Length: 236
Image 1: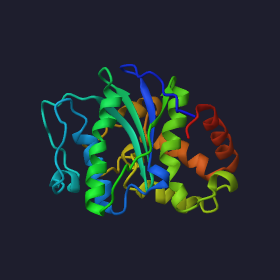
Image 2: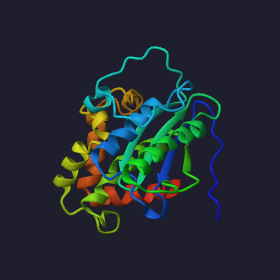
Image 3: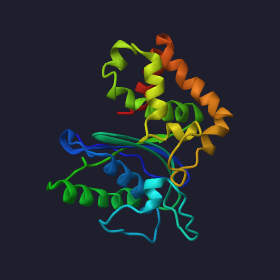
């Protein structure tokens, strides 16, 4: 059955899910993750179509701000989480067809990945999935859900059986480099990629967001209630 996507509207926010084809891993080593994150930055520009397959610039590796003055953004990147075989993005569209064009450009990562790892064929499942974020309550649930995804890597059955080691999970999420969650806590390594100010306006401070996430990790009832709410938004 074909995936029905919402019509993308400027200034509206969308949760985007991109999966590796047939469960294919889309990141095999640290430099793959770095390459994708830098691609998110570099391709978010009307003028940029490609930047080749060469080495990553030092700005991407060291997390320095590039300081380019004349970028024409397609989208605003509000959040992200890179998992071994799928990707979550939270995007606000800035220009007509901005999200579609941005993700089309991101196909350049697949060219890099295939060449580097000597594989052929499609890397990502098509079409990608998109969920329209319609209010602040949904936004908070979705951004939290995106940032809880890495729990799968250390406690695979957490959604059905609960979290067994809450402290370990909390520490893991706050140190997971391939998610924007550390950015919202002021610990991010890639300040040139996103601006977390929009969410801090809703929650007033990074510590409030941390407490919101922590409550769902440490209290089973809060977690179950949260997961029940995610079902209403077709997040997967």
